[in-house]
Length: 229
Ligand SMILES: Nc1ncnc2c1ncn2[C@@H]1O[C@H](COP(=O)(O)OP(=O)(O)OP(=O)(O)O)[C@@H](O)[C@H]1O
Ligand SMILES: [Mg+2]
Image (tube, rainbow, N blue to C red; front, side, top):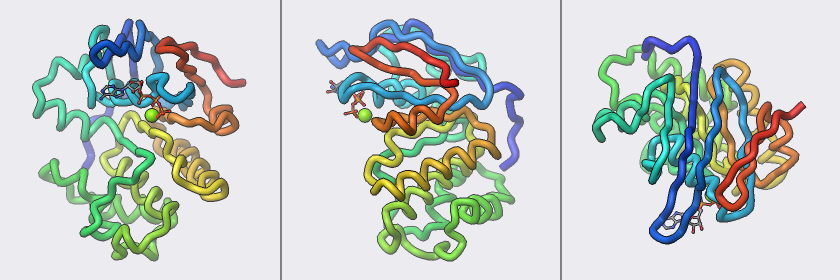
């Protein structure tokens, strides 16, 4: 499970534009982050937040512009290399948990490790992550036997199993009631303090956005960046 880690996490988005046919979604977006910074992304529905997260997460190639992660352009890799790269460098948490219903909680967290051959400590780390998200008593449950908040905790543990440099969350609390959403947000910050990944979270909640070090606002496909005090 241990892999050589870059000492400094780095993300650079330079002059990225993206369109879906005639629909221009992102226009010449540029920003750059280093280290374990936390970034909130807000903006009206349709402003391109998910599109931007998909591009940063290497799931979608931008129509133009450049993305650099740890000083390399991931889109230069072949598709299989890119898939492996994504699996080791990026963690994703979506609004929908996307857990595999036939697998247990512990197995779901281990799924991203299956792509790597030698991971003697994977189960240990999965158990440790599940302890940290408060699910030690649910290891053998199936996702269908969990509450919404519990399922999102599993999704967070799964996203962190390969020790990503960047954790990307797209409205991770969007499907949860207010109290549960708050505990999940607290958990993301707690884990961030320990694991020191770069954290980028799309949210419609401006109060939540104010808890991040940086706040990226998207409007009409362009972005502005503010540092929260
Ligand atoms: N695969 C696609 N094909 C065509 N158009 C798309 C595609 N994905 C997104 N779009 C369009 O691009 C625009 C931006 O979508 P995106 O999902 O990034 O917005 P968003 O800011 O995440 O919105 P929301 O807050 O509703 O999730 C929207 O107008 C959407 O209809
Ligand atoms: Mg979205």
